[in-house]
Image (cartoon, one colour):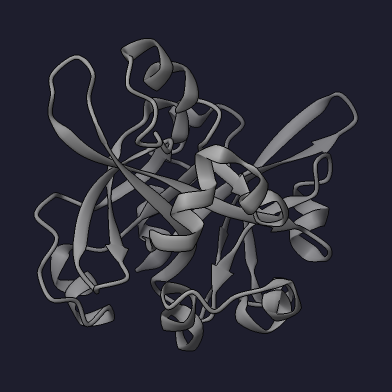
Length: 227
């Protein structure tokens, strides 16, 4: 958790939702983003500026292509309780926090020998923000300077734990009124409960078992679930 999310919001909706200094330059409407594809997605830094960043944080000290390709598969998520203990994350949690906009994410529930996917969303929050961290690194192959990010995760203790009922993990999804506090560096263990959208308000929508079928009828063109 969390390796799959999506966003149904064009640049106009994002600009209205977040008071940023610039506008996202990339298309952002993607129903299913798979972490292991390392796609570039919009994130918002602490200066309220939109950046493009690849999913899978690559710290600046990873200077060889072998290091970079290896480490990004291990940094898709970052456990809140060990952020300061991991060399890959320590600089980012102290100096490079971000918001990662989304409208939903996906999780699998285990029943017997089967795993069943659900789409999770908050009915009263059209666009929410994962708590994130990012890093700026130089691509060892191209020399291009790029950004990369991780989603911060926490223990799932309630409803979301019932959905992700093996590892009991969830992404940290911030209440809108506390997003700036996260960016400002204010967030500790005692604040976890107050800063996060409560688990009890989430909706879980069953999805076809094969993710290749998620955009197909008859489980109704999932994008229309938001309309």
